[in-house]
Image (cartoon, rainbow, N blue to C red; front, side, top):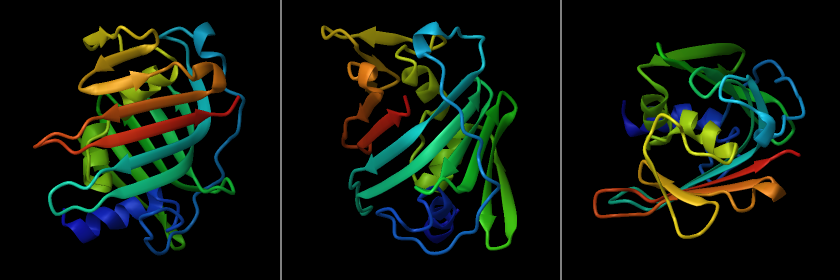
Length: 201
């Protein structure tokens, strides 16, 4: 997929051009449900989750690619392995929906008066095609609960509440304040990424 087409998909994720991407035009999907998320410490790996809040993604400049930023509201429902992530405008209107399962991933986005759905092999491919960078969205659900993905190797750090998994440094120290910080450091062949999550209490 070309750069123009990729960022056309990202426009829906970037809240109709209200973020740093400044991309034009999108419609509105049906309103996402609202719910108070359960306490992450009280949840279990098999229990369904309802998480909502704000998500900020910053991509550093990389080669001939400029730095980009995306800010959006979200509502997650399901499990890390199979769930639905609704993406919202600041006013709460749903503009895109990401779903994934072991069978693959899909993106539904409003385009004017209709809804377009695109399928992908997995959620990493989806994010790479639409955002320009593969992001571990299903693993991020584990991190929002203050723990590593149990199916992937991780390395604890000397700082309590901070660990590294899959090349990402996850800082959960601000979880009592409903905040999570995740970063991947820039390297010669790796683009730097900063993800900030603010969960609604």
